[in-house]
Image (cartoon, one colour):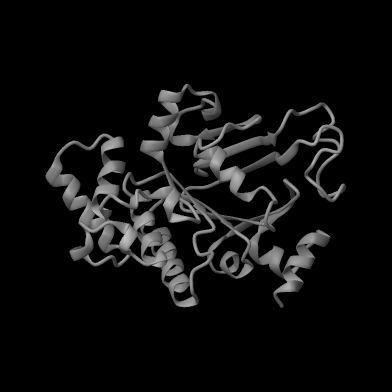
Length: 277
């Protein structure tokens, strides 16, 4: 029997501004802009529909401002979508966007992990690395201090954070090490869905390679579904089985990564692929 998707997203839309009835119709790739010419609202994303299976890495690629990060931040409840629905297989048949704030926190704490491009958004830099992980575990329902400490060591060891630095604040770490602590924290609750937002941007090549190897190891050892946000087709090629291409807040192409990279159909995807050849 075919397994159910870990996450299903239907018609996700996010509009910044006053909004009008013409916003969707007058924006998008065909208009070359995501800014409504009538009311000036920004259509960050519109009618985004996809699913992701347990153990799968789904890549979402596009230029800056295409709506990539908006999608995962809506899914993580960092912002309210304007419309659409999302369903987590592990938490029932309810649209998670319509849950009350208490239940949204429960879903985020028990089922989701998030890694931001800027570690400052995912870590408390003045709290120890172990303390950051403990915070996530406590939110997920852990109570035994000894078990929390052991779990913290296990999680920090995985991305090769020296355990003697467990009680040190991440503000003293390099950007790459901060990112690895953030990944450890995101994995603390064994998330069903892991959201990865430009996690290698701004890091040097050797650090990027270590983090990408870590993501591959996570895929081998867990059933977490992952959504990988990036503008880097090299990262997409290395990690994702399927890929969504975004332009001006819309999906312009979606399919198997190899097919998209070898035989892109949309002119924007062709431009992306040709630009890295």
